[in-house]
Length: 429
Ligand code: AMP
Image (tube, rainbow, N blue to C red):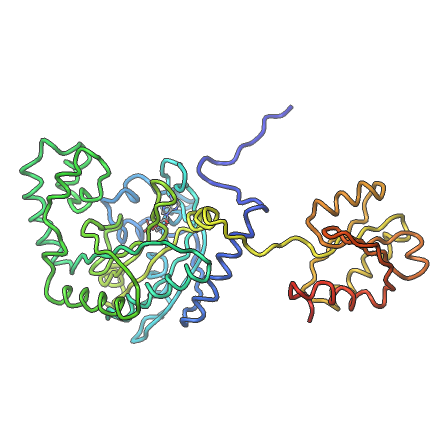
């Protein structure tokens, strides 16, 4: 036998058994985003490598070791997007969406990072990405958080915890950085190799380290949130006040720094204990310098990304059942005359009941085998079209989920019959 070609490690096939969860999440997200006046944008999956190097930061895990980067046939260095904020900013600048306006935008789709695959961490994963451009106030940070909280409720997800922090302005970060470097230098011998390197390159990320031997050091390190500039401090206080007024619970986590360099002021994460080590379901924050850094007129910006794989996994831990996509009815045509009549009949039914899910089986095999196929499809009804039924212009209707006598229904009445039977599911017009 010829060798089988395998899929790529860390890149998942999302199978038909799982897609109902995805559609459930996508539908709920679209509804919630609509309700807040956000508009969809769809940037491409490929961008110039430079875009990510400049935005996410040269000295970040993503840019240093996780990007899928290659030269295309004309020698340009391109990268499969590892996240979407940079693309959103690029597109907004390029199409002049930012001029003196507030833009509320979202997109959804795959991201690519060459990470070590494990539960909840993949090389192709999906995000719902939401960004607001042109609004500087804490009210918009709060709006984003309220929106996510509403999405959790819409999905029936309890128990996600909100963690908040403020990283201040770039100046405050610079001042804090030297304070942090002074502190960690005093304990240089206790730092692991990665952190020692970061001391010179990106000391804030030392706070993110999971190395258990360094936790006491990190715990005692100076906290940025205690050294904020006055305006950032006020912004943070106001955000907390708005959230409190809206009844949103949160915890200030001074160690929340996030893995991307562009954040200023507000950062937040929604976390859960139910998914093991990969407990961050959604992360985001404000990035007031990024638009200018990518070459646009300066504009404040704030946003977040939800990890869809993790959201789906979380739904499953809560036994949330997405709406079924199983067919309502399974039409069995027995014999050649029936097979010819089946499709025209099915088309008429689909016209009469626009939301009817109907499978037509004009294939081979005896009635018993075909009824088993009908059963496996999850359908509620088998519609049997044999020679007798063709002759009498009717159908035999068999309930597959409840014990009931088989009924013979004239084909002209079948549309109405189906509407009546399936009305509970909202199939009727
Ligand atoms: P980030 O873009 O790193 O801020 O991540 C935002 C969210 O995307 C995280 O909170 C996760 O839910 C999700 N995420 C990030 N990286 C991965 C990955 N490699 N696999 C699955 N989900 C991810």
